[in-house]
Length: 475
Image (cartoon, rainbow, N blue to C red; front, side):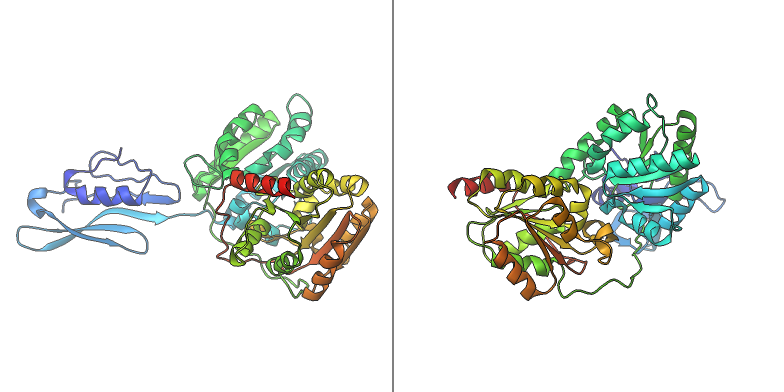
C-alpha cells in the first residue's frame, strides 16, 4: 500500500484515485511506478540545499485545492501561519510512450532487421511505422502467424540473421507447430524475436475472448520453452530488453519473446497511398446485404469490425441477434463454421460474411468448401484490402489486378463466383444467391475504414450461442 507523510494526506487520497499501482518510498522522495507513467522524484530542500520534510507547524493545514497541469504536475497549496500561500510540488508525472521509429531503429541497430507477422491492435503504431519505413524486402505481412515463423526461419537460414515476428497473443496457437517442430533447440534451433501484443492482460478489462487468452499467455510461452519479459514503456528500458533478447538468441539459438501491453507506443499513422476508390465501405456493404436476407437465413460473421457493425445495425433496425453467430475470435475460421452448419441444416440458407484478411489467414478452407460445400452455403468476402480492425495495414488482397477471390473460388470448385462494388450490384447478387445452388462466392470490393465510435456487442458470447442455437432448432 502506498504511504505518504502526514502533511500530504490530501495528496495521498488524490493519488490513490489517480493511480492504481503506486509505490511511494519513505520520506520526501516520491516515486510513482505505473505503466505509461514515468516520474521525477520530488525532493524538498532548505535554502542550504539540504533535504528536509515539510513542516506541518510551518505551513499549517493543507487547503483543498489541487492543480493538475497538462504534464500532470501535482501541487499542494498550503498556508503558513502568516496566511501566505506556498505552492508545493509533490509529484511530477509525465506520460511516456515508446516512439515507434526509435524502437525500430534500436532493433535494426542490433541486427534484427527483417520484420514479418500479422498486425495487432496493440502493435498497430509500430506495425504502421514498419510498413511505411522498412526497406523493400525487409518487411512482409504474413497470411498467418505460423507462416511468419516460417518466413523468419527462412530468412535466418539464408542470412544467419535474426528476425522479428509480430503477432497478437491470440495467434499463439498458429505458431505452436513451427515453434515446436522447426525453431526448437532440439530440432533446427532457429532464433527469432517474437513481439506479442498482450490482449487480455490479467487485471485489465478486455473482451471475453481476449481475457481467456491473456490469462494463459505466460503459461503458453513457458510450456513452449520460450523465455519472455514485458516490454518497458520507455526507450532506455526497451533497449535493455532488446539487448537481453539479442544476447539470448545469439547464445541459445532459440526464440525469445517480448510481451507488449496496452498503450506502449506513441501514435503513428500510415501515409495515404493511391488506393482504388469504391462507392461503399464494409459497413455500407453489410447493411445492403442484411436488408436482402430472408427471415430464416443464417449469418456467420467474421472476426473484428464486421461482427461489431452487424450487431449495431441489428440494434438500429430494432432486430434481434438470434440469426447471427458473431465469430469474435478464431480469425479465419468463420467460413468453416458456416460449412459445418450448412451441412447439418440443408434447408436453411447459410451466409458467411467474411473479410479479406481473415479469408487469407486460412485460405485452405476455401478448398474444403469448394469440394464439400452444400448447395445452401453462400460465402461473401468483403475485400477492403486491409487489416482494418488492427490499424489498416494492407492485406495481400489489396491489388485487384493480381489478386482475385473469384478466381480462387472457381479454382477450388465453388459452383459460381462473381464480384460487386455498388449498392445495386450487391442487391442483385444477394437476391440471386439465395436461389442459386452453392457453394457460391461473392467478392465485394470496398473502401477501408470504420466509424471511430463503433460499439461492441452487449450480449456475451454464451448468450449469442444460446440464441443462435435456438434459432437454428426452430427452423
